[in-house]
Length: 159
Image (cartoon, rainbow, N blue to C red; front, side):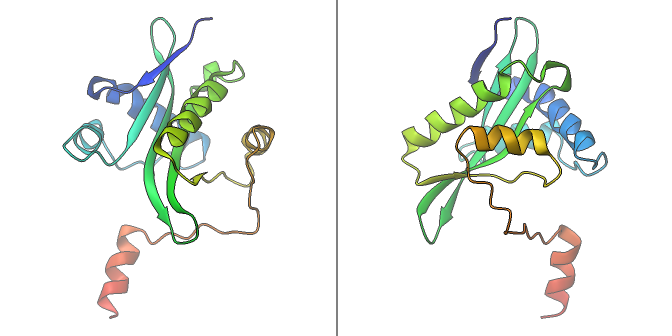
C-alpha cells in the first residue's frame, strides 16, 4: 500500500472533520465535537492560522491526520502541541501513525521547538505503547485540566 503525507489544504477539511468525528466515537465522546468544516477552513487557512495539519492519503482517500499548533512553556520555551493524531480505524496497524508522527517530529525540529507534547487517554494502551516505543515519556502522574465554555462563563460570573 502506498501512503503519502502532505500538508493539508483547505479542501481537505471535510475529510479532516470526518476523522475528528471518528476519533470522538473511539474516545467514547461521540457528541463532543462542536467544530465544523467551516471552522477548520477559517481557523487553519487565514492570515494567522491557528493550526497546521498533515494528512496521510492512499491513492483515493485521506486516511489519517496530525493536527498541531504552537504553545509556550515557561520551563522550556517553544513547544509544538500535537492536538490529534488520527488514523482511520480501517487503516490502523499499517504504519500510518508512524508516518504521521515522523512528519510532526520533523516539523517540530524545523521550527526549533524544545518539546513536542500531547495527551493520550489512560485506557488507550495501544497508543501509549506506540508512543513509548517512539521514545515519548508518558507522564502518568499529570492530570489534564479543562474549563469548558459553560465553566468559563460560570467562573466569570463568580468574579
